[in-house]
Image (cartoon, rainbow, N blue to C red; front, top):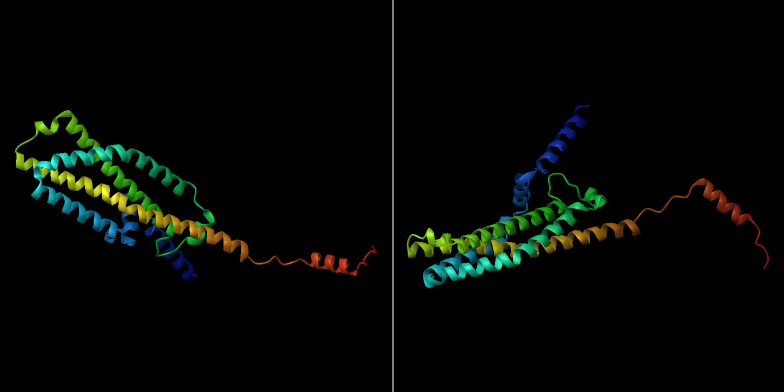
Length: 227
């Protein structure tokens, strides 16, 4: 009698471990999927760093113009992009296939449904980060706050390039995450379709009851009426 109780306790611990909530849960899933070690994060970090250093060393006088262009682009494009992403995330989370989720449920392993939700959530958070940063910089520029707190020309160039790096990283990372999101959604849809196809064509045939068999035998014994 102790073994079933122990197994049940282990299963409960596994469910709790792989279903952490809030930011901790998102970080747990992303860590299990090695998301931060993939091309999207590394490429975004590298390109943003190279671009900001390039501007600082070669054309520092153009750093404010470059930063203004990035801010303007984000403020123009990202509100619509964020709304579209939120709508897609609501559809993916709000209307799941319960039968497929049941079949995909795993112990000690992240399911495909969890992976899709985590990539969606990460993409949304990065988009929000980029939009909030861009709006804050835009308000500072329009209000003249950047000119008031200006200390020296060289320090201004450095600060501009730091914000260029931060904003470029948000832009590029959210864009580079999109292919992963599309691939995961496609994989989920393929799994969903395969599930229903197998359910339709590989389902066990119905076993005829004794009453049906007697009925068939009675039909066979009946004489065929002449035409």
